Length: 296
Image 1 (cartoon, rainbow, N blue to C red):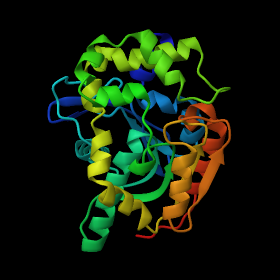
Image 2 (cartoon, helix red, strand yellow; image 1 turned 120 degrees about the horizontal axis):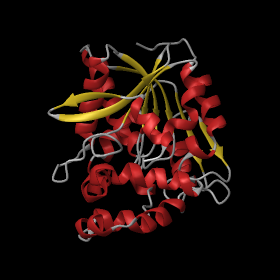
Image 3 (cartoon, helix red, strand yellow; image 1 turned 90 degrees about the horizontal axis):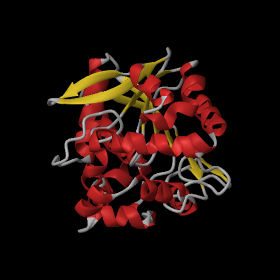
Image 4 (cartoon, rainbow, N blue to C red; image 1 turned 30 degrees about the horizontal axis):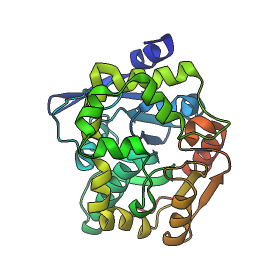
């Protein structure tokens, strides 16, 4: 592990959920912003926007169970519902009952579940976590427009356990690099950091299980898509349209289904806008999260 990743880990804390340790970062002051990363990486995905946003907001960024520096039980039945439970528990433990949301990839799906729960609580008058404004980044929010790369399809299918055991750093880097824009691919040291996070505590052995959220998206489409299309809160999608997984097609679907859709398309940017176009993500987040209106 290089010095940058080691420093990120040393600056973090641990939260325990049902015996599993969850790594998280908590920094800054002001409105709380929950930052949820995607598959297969970790909270490190936010490092290029971290300092600029932490100057204006309090950022809370967990490594979801099975990812990054969190525990990675190999035989665990990972689920989006459990990820949402963990996030709610972490925020409650930190004394936070209202957050803005910045989400990417798998984090979009966890965010959609949190949004569904928030809307249900508001309708019933039940207490609990409230969501403010939401900034979505590239992710499979609409499963009918999601086009997983070949490696992810294999991981989610019958060969998954074998691939999880045999995947090499070289194969991982080759597959991940294809998700970035042609001019914004990370350099070799950054790619090694991604692999270090995935393989930490042999986490790659659990990838065939941590990727099960893709099937959950299809089963729960009405619940999770409906949470977005029916919501009246301030939301924005920042989309790297060069993303082969969830780029332009996903942005078009968002614009089609979400009333008064606020979509920012980034030409030449791939699956990771927060890494490839950090300034654009920071500007979009500051504008959206600095609003003072609160629909609750």
